[in-house]
Length: 420
Image (cartoon, rainbow, N blue to C red):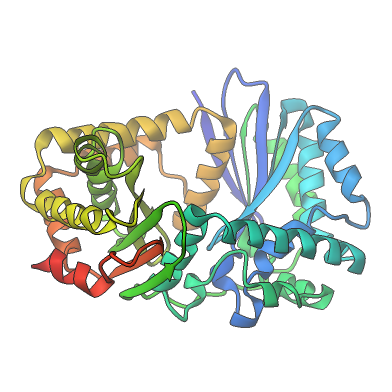
């Protein structure tokens, strides 16, 4: 049976470990409460750029030495930036956890920020931005997010615009680190074949002397109705719709997840069966829910032809309206089983466990047991799902369409049809 333990240092630094019996490997990482929504407008993209720079070298290690030290023992190291956090993590054998933690702490606390490395990585990120811009079913979600949260830090892209990325310098990185990378905004999470006491002892030596930076509350996110329409000669017309949904602190978040799963979460879902299987209007169509600190949304996406995007949009609206009236017991039970099974199967790896524990600790300052999450899912009933489905029809809505989309309805027309 796995055991989760939490420890807090005097400066606010938190440590959570989960020992998973029988595992000879482990995942260990640092989750920092500094993501895209913590950037000022002039800093857009700096959190992600900083994540890249962590791997370019420190006072103790070159970029090659960072990679070699982990890969010499068969492990791997990586990082990601989201809207609310930046994570640096490694997977390794249990015996190499101290080495992995030493490397991770070094790249996070002591990045060198050499001018030459900044220029090299700037070029890499500009290529990453260019690749995203050339990928319709990637860039459309950035546009959709901007349409839902216009003029807000929460709505800006993680990668940032080219002109901002082109101007960041070492002093900019150091300023962002000094404001956001304090021990009171960090969580060390490890799972697998780990020794809690040994990790706490090492963490105390590394992080215990750091001074807190103070918690900085990000600007509230306000979901607003908006639209982004880009007409271009592409093979497919891309359709993405956002419906306002609860944040992860709202108990209704489980209802929204179940509704989303039943409507478009799998091959048995309403949207897939009606639009793909019965009408053949697209190769894939799906709905998925996302929850954040103070907001959330359900996203519906499909790609179709320019001639059929109007019909696809109309059928989508009809299915959303119908779901508010006749969502069945069987559909809700299936959606609950899919969510529960997906959660359980996804947590069979130490990497998933470490990430889950860090995320939950950042939200609740504790790690709720899996049984608690399952009980909340099971508590949702058909009446609640139907009620939420009716409420979402009049909620704020955002739309992004890209490609030969002249025939696509506008967001106001969709809102009117949903609430009719």
